[in-house]
Length: 145
Image (cartoon, rainbow, N blue to C red):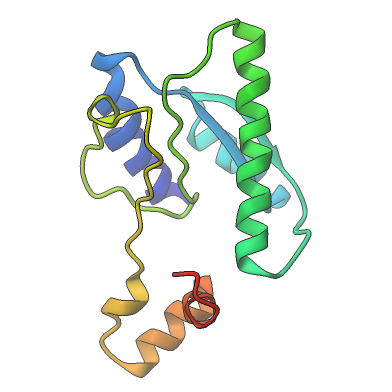
């Protein structure tokens, strides 16, 4: 969680400060990590919600999480009476390897950043370790990756 947050702060939040800045809204299925996650994103965090897992099905869980974060974003827009131009959705365990300039993305498109590490696994053991962590192979088998 710490490495992911540091790379998001460096490569997304700080990289976009000269271009209008970035607000962070979190949703997680880890209430036991709420204090840690909120503190990691502290200076950019505008809202967060950390709830117990509702479903083990990965795609459904991710869709619910995105909708919960979207609801928090809409509520924040209403409070400040100013809509966001662009919303970037990322997993909390994503490590951002370089600057992501949001001003280069059109707000009229839907952007999906995806690089599944299961495809880069060097051995069956590595593939099994990736699958045990994120469920990539079971998602791919259902046509989701």
